[in-house]
Every structure is written in structure tokens, then in C-alpha cells.
Amino acid sequence: MTVTLQLNGERVAFDADPQTPLLWVLRDSAFLTGTKFGCGIAACGACTVHLNGAAVRSCVIPLQAASGAEVVTIEGLPKAAGLPRDTLHPLQSAWIAAQVPQCGYCQSGMIMAAAALLKAKPVPTDADIDAAMTNICRCGTYPRVRAAIHSAATAMATAAPAPTSTQGVAS
Image (tube, rainbow, N blue to C red; front, side, top):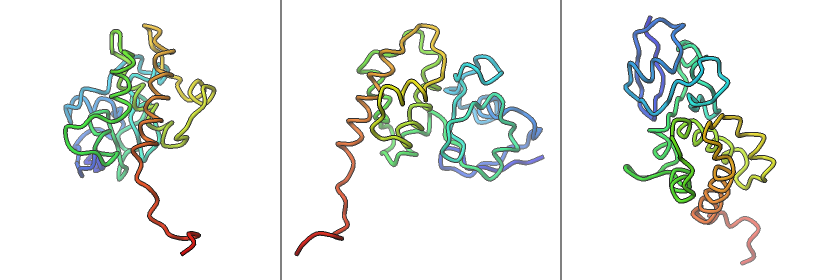
């Protein structure tokens, strides 16, 4: 069966068993290996991608559930944010600056979960971050993750264009 979806801004079709986990289609058919296999039961979050803007664990999402949907992987995160080609997303830059990665295995999933958080809550509290970041980091870099998310939130807020509406502005 052929399943068509938007992958990192491009319309793509996959001829695969519709029950194949999205993770394996991304890795083995689209050759996007930034999304990692960790547990296979949606517990660790290494496989986190965005499906129609929501952070999901792709190891348990069947390909057919993504039919017609917008899927964004770590490779497409900057483009999805409207950034120029070969540019890092502010979260990726913050991750590097805060020296979050140790082994690095969970990091793409963590960044994808953090991007969904910042989309929903542009200025998250520590409690918001703790509640949203359910990904497992075996190296225990959680304090650095929190610092990087706060740093990215600040960078994204200062980089946001000024409102163009003149509504409510006195002439």
C-alpha cells in the first residue's frame, strides 16, 4: 500500500505495510537517521517527531496514521521554523551552548519534544519543562536540558518579528 504524507515540507509517498512503525519508515526508507530507536514502546522518547505539530513517539505510530499528515523530524526542524537552509534551530544552538549532549543518543528526540513545548508555551516555567520533557536521558543531563530550553525561549522571543498590526495604535 502507498502512503503519502508531508515529510519535512516535501510531499513523499512510501510503498510499505501501513502498520510499519513510522520510525522505521523514516530511518529505512527516507534515510533520516536522526530519529533514533530506543525502546520500541514509546517510553524513552528517542524517536520523537512532530505529527501535525504534536510531539509523538514514532516507534508506536503506524505509517497509515501519518497518511496525509505533516511529519517533521530533527532534520527538518529548522525548515519547519522558517529558517534558512543550513541554519540551526534556536534549540539546537542552545543545546550546543549549554553542552547538553553527553552520549547524544536521546538528543534529537529531546529537541523535538522541546520544540513542541516552546510552540505551545513560548515562555515555559521550570514546572512546564518538567511536565513536558518526559524523554529519558540515560546520561542525566536534565538540568542542562532545562537551561537550554530557557535559553532557546529567550532567543526565540528576541528574534520574533515585531507585530505589524496598527490596531489600537493612536495616530
